[in-house]
Amino acid sequence: MKIPFVKLNAVDYPFKLDLDNIVFEGSIKKKNQKLAQISANLKGFIYRHCDRCGEEMELQINENIEIQVSDGIFKDENNTLSDTVEFFDSHIDLIELAYSELQSYLSDYFYCDKCL
Image (cartoon, rainbow, N blue to C red; front, side):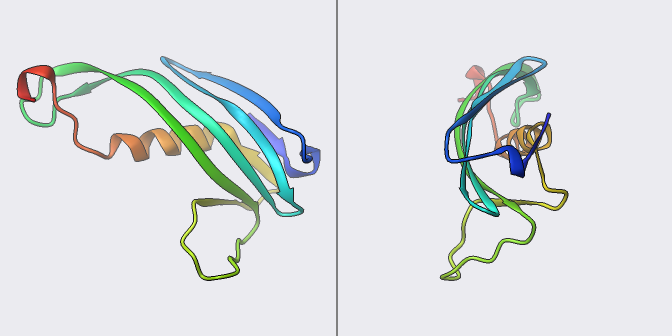
């Protein structure tokens, strides 16, 4: 699901994506001509192997996401580290963003109930 930057305005634009067992739901609000704010929730479950014993487990996911998206290169004003994703085709690709956030979350270590 791609949303053009030109279609966004200062009013929340709601979205909901069903990705297998994961739901990515939230809203996008334009902050200025080249920047928008996404407030969303990544919720559901995924099957994953325990990082200690290797047994398959069902990992519950419920993560709030606050991120900025930029139409092109983002230049911060005060050299602060921010959560800004740059898109270079004047569209926000929500599927790409959802999978990216999911992979970022899954890069941590997870243990089954027996290994805790």
